[in-house]
Image (tube, rainbow, N blue to C red; front, side, top):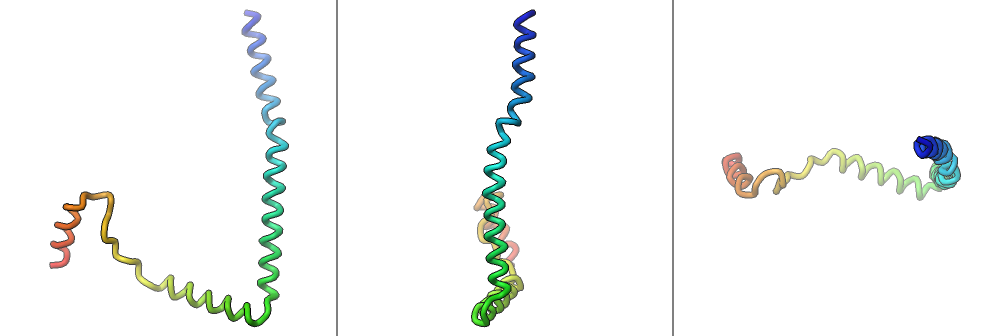
Length: 96
């Protein structure tokens, strides 16, 4: 019975100490994320205060993206969900 009490105490201590051991790792990861977010904010600010040449390039990129969004989706030639022979037969029937 004494071994069960020692096991329970050890298990309880492990449950209490594990989050404390993870705390420095979380702090380190969050610090890296915060630095990355600061870089993104700096890039966004630089884009907002860009020179006219960069603004023209951004406008052209937006136009290209809009044109890509309006283009119809390509027709799928092969679907791995069905057998190749079944697809060929169904496609022949659909074209007729």
